[in-house]
Length: 258
Image (cartoon, rainbow, N blue to C red; front, side, top):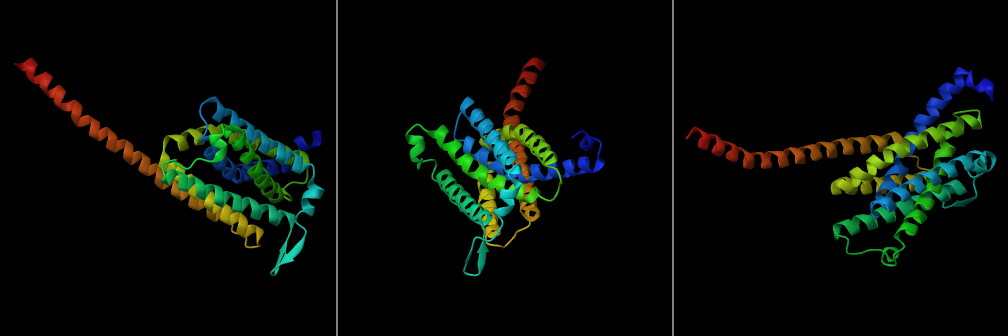
């Protein structure tokens, strides 16, 4: 164990794995931020903490089940020319869940929140949010760990990378959640991202791999455009308020001169 600390190759692998886990965790952070936006105050914070803690637990468990996890990639059966494994089925189910969930959320936002789900009406919103977080955590954990296999030779390095990345994601999740709640257009953009990620997961499960770099570039570009829109709105609000103050200053100055 101690020899790993003094091996430079281990540190390079740790940095590469940590960076990859952080990038792959963006999907999870966005999804959790959308879900907790339906809760208020302390409940939202607690749901976010539980969601990220569950993601960490799932990833560590899967790392210690590497042999079983690699077996999930073996073909299970063929469907219309596609060889489907358990991993493919998990990705397809998770992708369809994301598409349906994000589409319903978009519809709810457009309709002004008229259609609330039954869990919210029954007062079980918190439990319903955690249940959805668990489902999608499993999908993202399987995808993330299978991608990480082969980048490091030691499970300890993978566990350390996962823990560091989850800590970074926890620090970023609060900022992302607050930003999503503050600006409705950003929430709509995040929901559109979830639809895009869902389509990518389904395509990946069917054997059509879409490089994540393309998806993340589209997300970063759209987020940059939305950030400029937010700045423009702030500047317009400031310019609207400033003329109302200037006449008062002029009147006071004129009254003093008289």
